[in-house]
Length: 248
Length: 248
Image 1 (spheres, each protein chain N blue to C red):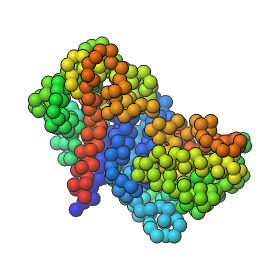
Image 2: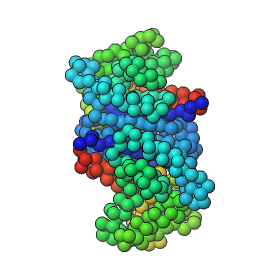
Image 3: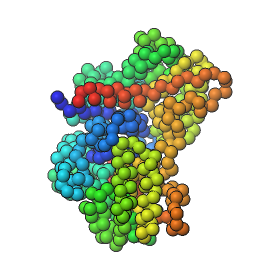
Image 4: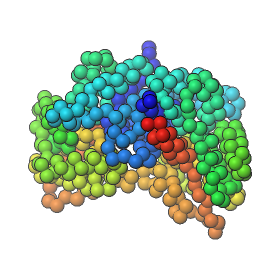
């Protein structure tokens, strides 16, 4: 049996990668160092813009992503994770080119939501690239769930919230994300997926409660019941931990 | 010019490594992903106990550390960091065996403290291994600073606080660390070094203010002026960022 080694293809962006690693540690049952997972993180934030690549082909992140995946391969990684939703557009190609066993975060989120009663319609907070790619719409559609996406005004707020994580300005971002969750609820969402790994960072921010605690504290102007907020970063971490323990 | 690549020899322990990476990101001036540092993190928490190795030779972490450092070497790392003070006992051997350009966290902390007016005597909160090794006592002595170490009762609290980070039980640990800072102040320390990378994690914990904000909020039974708390994790991050920017 080869000792498992988790490989993280990260840096897209760095704060999201750091948040994924912290989540992996927090959710691993452990009382000493040696109970934790062996992890190697390739965090190259110089990877060209993923969103532009999907929207209009104005950039090509793939060669840099492939170089990172090959570095992980060379280190003997047995379970791989990529905490960036937009980059999942390139996942099939990356798997084909490297043979790395990636846990697919979009598939995992759809699997979990598909197994819950009353999950849909599902609101999507994501980059324009992720939304345009249809990745979530297809995966959720396959488990019988309809999706709700933000109107242009709300999407602009989501874009700004994502950018604010990359420049470490979290204070304003939190209100924007909470507001976007409410808008999607008004548009019929029963649950909302934080389908960009920068978004859970906003809600976990320095003084923020855990995302799962969002419901009761978020401001909501109407009498709507607030949707449950789904954090794919946690679902990805849990799936990696399960696979690691199964392989050991 | 080779593009710089930061290598982190981590996992000792995982939460400290995650905290170092988060600190590196937080302290890098950036408005977009591409402004951040290229980083690769080797986080192997299965490295045998460093403290036992120093205290009585009951474990040998060196082969696992060397394997990690060689993995970083093979990836083209140009600047290396190891966010574990006790492991710094092995740093000269690691540098000799790999040629990696490590930023020495103990040396960096001594340099910064040596340049400040009224830094000493310097209190040390660390593992028993770090204290026994004399690493800090020698480096600080070389810049003319005396050191103060905890009494047995306080050291037991420090040991427990460090262990609590490794098992993600932060609530009690905070009070223990604050209490230990006070004890060292009573024993004459003007400043206190958090000379174990798990300790800043305690003070940065979920609801905790930043370590630098500790002073005014820490409970102190006497009328003593509280010492300034020095966080070598931040000093290591700042030194890595400076070297990276100089190399680019």
